[in-house]
Image (cartoon, rainbow, N blue to C red; front, side):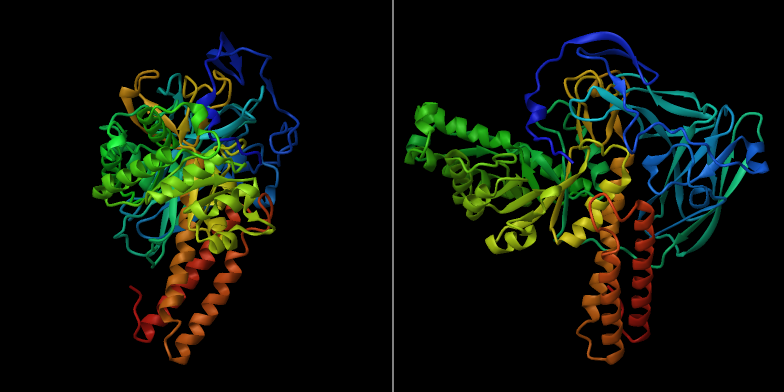
Length: 611
């Protein structure tokens, strides 16, 4: 998969628009000029679905639809693999305090009017949020003139109606109709509160439509007798798009709404946050000052929302420091070619040190982000990293090619965040290189890169099993929400919108009316991946707790669980786009959960209780 340079979003200019074009059955007020947008029909994943669906049962004919489940929720379409996909009941499991996704599709045998899906679970210790997977046209690539239909937004539906996008981030209620020989995808988020008692609970999913008998689908929810642990030394960060971006335009008062949603999805830190304002006016007198109040304010809000950090500062903050020093010393751009003048270097170091000191009241670790994906070790790039490190700051770089840069810059790098497709360097795993140069190993790869919308597999895998198997200590999601014009129009910019989730606004394109985050399959999948990691981590923690217990029974239990953990973690992988599915991930997660439960039982039986 092609990774798009992160700077690109900031460099794209205004776009000429032409009015009112219909794409994929949706009429847009305007789209960017250029060749016509055409539907992609020959792609291996999005090709036209022209096969004959299986024959329904008599009960299904009466209800007017067939219930089926695909291995990835983003793949809803005409049912094909009948034996594997056709279902008459659903089940899921989760731990107390966890959110868990489940999904199913309805294939309409005839037009369905006023479709309603409810979960009947009276007096049960969990809640279920039911959403409609909204299908809409999206560009197939960054500058593509092709589009395909994909289920992306997850929108509330109830009482025979569904919310639907209109324009400018605004939703409206519409009748929930499904045309004959088309599918509706239903998304269930099951939430168990921390105090939920373990057990197996029998709920019912009721599917109804006008003039048809209701279909009752048994839905078993098992709450597991375990508590997931959170690793304090592992980080999941998101490019938050709160600074200098087309996209989120939130006030300080609105930010907590967004930050709480980040935390609920397992995110622990933010990338591209403000740092503050440098003051180099008295630099010639040896005085450097830094106003870090923007960083301190956001870090406080993040902590209160449940995001402990670390955070990564926006690279524009580095530019402000460089500009302030250059102006203070009266230097021209030509003066900074090649080796920097001593006074300039000392000025950057002094302001970096002032920034480090000024941010200490925030009580949170942060990294500075001078450049995005540098591939060449230019003197300016290397000296910038060296100067900020000399000033006491920790540094962050994204990398996916250019080994010469890594060789020369390594002494000045605190975190190397590798592109997902570049997890090997010099022919060896990136983790080993980072250990060799004493840098933290992070990687980026989930979010809204080309083709990732609606894909649970790629997002869940990156945030979970790939994070675990690679040994990385941090994972970055790119990017939360960068838009060109209308949030609900992927065709009104010179490039497709980059959005892992979308804003819900009450007035078109009016960010003062921001209500919160509209989830997508991709956004929910990242949470699922983080929880996959937490299951693996919880088992690993229990193993470590009893590994040194001298009793033979405990040694045997630890060894057996460790062997099983290694075996299970490797069952998801074997190549980026092959060898697994979200369905398989659920199966592996359940096996891990069973190991946790068994190990905790051994510990309880022999006088050792998990913390």
